[in-house]
Image 1 (cartoon, rainbow, N blue to C red):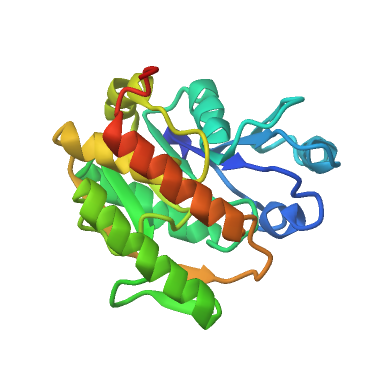
Image 2: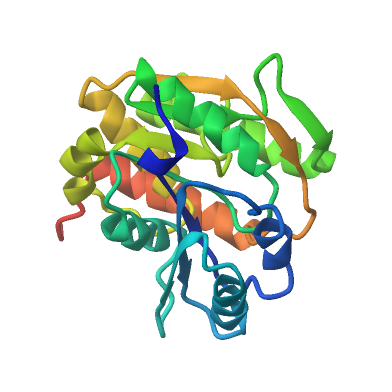
Length: 235
């Protein structure tokens, strides 16, 4: 049985000073390990460290970088810093309640990876995205299915959990550093023969997503390049 003390949650936190309190305030009594990765230019890291000082009972590490890592780059740095047999990541905005992460980690008793899904029957969307963002999500999902053969309803939900051993196998091959990181990671795990469970999740749209229209286009371009050149080597 997976227990919290065996789990590390990585939280990429780029310029999250104005909303990181939502997540921090949900950490009371948390028995797992946390790695926050701060690569912005606001007070996010300072806010997290002040919180950690007030709560020495928590296992909380705050990594700070003076340059932009990207969502995927931040997750990679956090995974490198983790030393538990199970590692996951979640968004800094608190869109996924902390308790949902334990549901994902529990699935790792019979799988190598578990990903939260907002589009499966049984999911509970407390506050939904607007129709335009939902349409973009469905178009993106269809493109991912065509390019990578990933039969998942939701590759971009920020809540994911993994066994560490298969991560160590595929991470050296990873090319993506941006928001498209999730797709590449699932693709490489699937190609490695890993079992990936998609799990209904409780989710709350926070309305101030860091993913804009330009990011969406950049993700599509990056994924097409990845599919054409999986090694990322100069052509």
